[in-house]
Length: 57
Image (cartoon, rainbow, N blue to C red; front, side, top):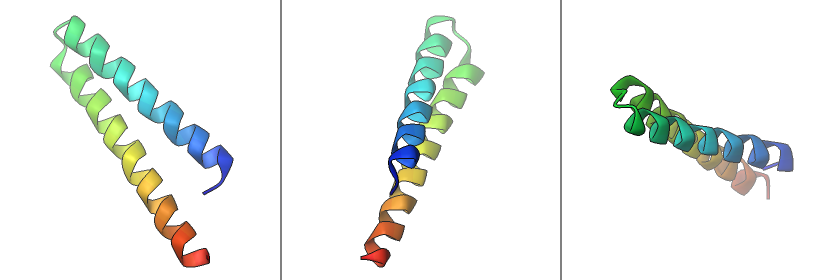
């Protein structure tokens, strides 16, 4: 997993947490759900990169 990918995944996860917290604070269920989805997507991308790395080595 390249450093760029790690940084991008971490940024996406942080953005998702911010969206989730903003949605929760403003009672916007849609925004909260988007934030959770963004975090899940970042986690899946990270897992996919780890699997690719395992097969490279």
